[in-house]
Image (cartoon, rainbow, N blue to C red; front, side, top):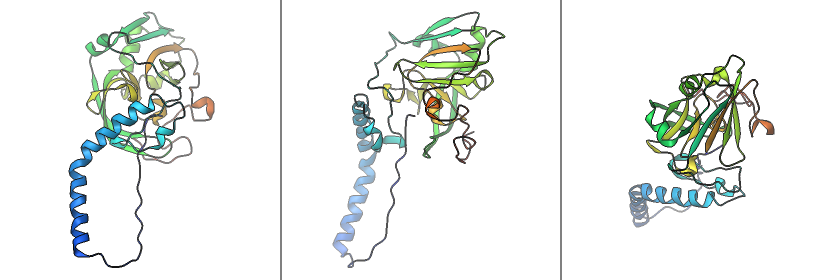
Length: 246
């Protein structure tokens, strides 16, 4: 799980009337806040991103962040990968195992999807663009064998794993994503490459993707071993009734 929206509830209470100067002053501060908000938001996002990468407790995930997202990691620390040292390996029940560099992935045909991101805990970030290579295309190039039934995803944080059935992995709305919100995916959002599973809850969209292994059975991922549904369709799993994202 990688992000979260913050909500603010405003109550009503009685009190003495507000004077004209106070009222006008409040309006002025409000206008200033509107002007300054984008800059402050970007600054907060950068600050929380840097702190979250060094926070083994996960407490930074409780703080609001820019763009409706929060940072999460299940590992105490995650190494950075650059274009020079990033690698994505595809192996298992395939005829043509391969290791891709970031440049290799960027050179392949790219698909752009704009859909809501939905977390199983209830928050949603609407209209989020993701761009990358369709997972189905990478599997086709690898030559999936007849005994294959599922995919296991591993990550360079050394901890997180995920899974899909082969039929799910071949959907056109499953990406090996290189860009998010119209920019390269940064480290704190799971870059330089992450999985994006558009129709499922966001815990299926594994960050810091490093391995795609074709297997003969589904192996539950990190959160699924802790009780989350293996099939995580939005609105049809984990006891939730959220509107679908596709």
